[in-house]
Length: 121
Image 1: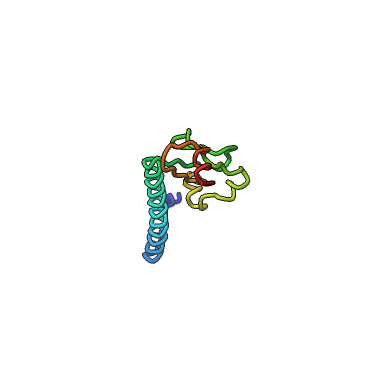
Image 2: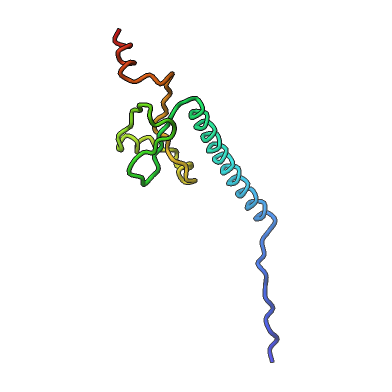
């Protein structure tokens, strides 16, 4: 009768372990930078809203832009073909971050007609 074969465990060298740890460290470092970039963008957009501004964002696959802020204020909205050219970097899109296409600030809530009349004077 033959003896049962012993299971052989996967073996790797210390050099392979160091290479894998280094690659994992580089990837996690890059991912941390991307997440900080997203956090900074969210902080900047919340600052825009606190300053009575508004912004428009466009997500990949969406048919239209989404406005955030005081929507009673006038805003120039980009055409859909223009907004697709203003896409967020691929790393941010990969993590689900939308493209911010337009940011607008208004000094006060004066109707646009009065502002145009003031500029023509």
